[in-house]
Image: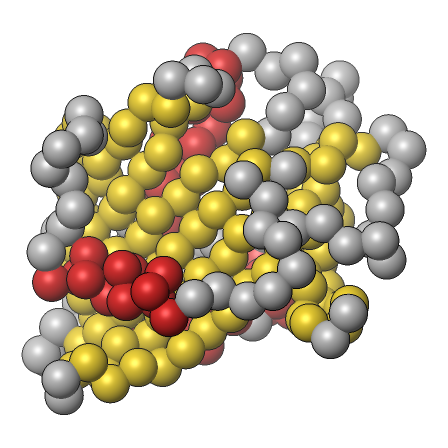
Length: 208
């Protein structure tokens, strides 16, 4: 699932926009996991890994689209409230901006780190202003794997945000994360589910 050197395609951005209008849940075994506070979370079992992919749909009534997108992109702000961030920064590699992120795991598990491309586009789709952010694992020679830290090589996320027609935001998010190592799949799935619950909170602090 690593993204080779390059950028995201226009089609990938359009696919994220399309999910806001018409959720793509047909043709696969997407299961409704929970509905709460105007948010619906679905999951799909990845047969190769035994882990789940997640899709989140809903409305955040107290967050404007621009503020939500700006907070999401702010790496420094994340460090202020997320106790599990050990390191997170952007670095220019081969003409591209790459994000490095190390996450603290509880003892006796090893920390995980991510190297991924992230790109935001603010699109006009037939008069609808939609903020789209795509992120996916990549590999660059400037950011080598560190001793004692497990590199996450399967990470993918899509986020699309537009106005709900009032003061809030209509949101779609796709998320998949395989932290690797010797962690049981049931524990990884539980942690991913908790992450989705945190994302679904109607707050202007988006957690990923």
